[in-house]
Image (tube, rainbow, N blue to C red; front, top):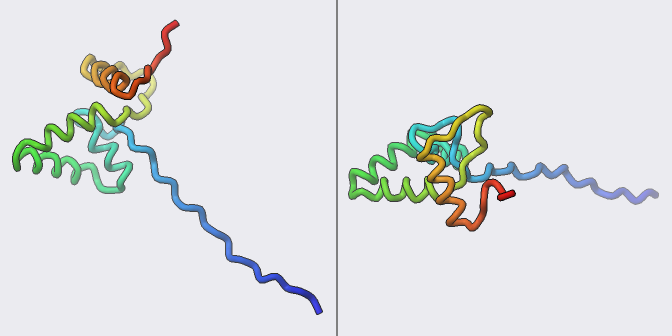
Length: 106
């Protein structure tokens, strides 16, 4: 008589959710909607429509978008991409708020 150990079915690992970052490829202004789309799986157009709807319903859409633009870190930059002065300002604000620096001083 042999002792058979029941085998357990293989466990599929949970899908890894991407980190919330502003998109460097799917962007119209700051990449917030593209980043939210990558994170949530909801199309970026729907996020943009939501921001416009909130803006028309009282102006909250603009405030929320600007806060997310500053608080959500930027995605990886494409090679050879030059940052606009506005994007440089947003990155400096983000680093100041989070207490980190993108490049260490030498």
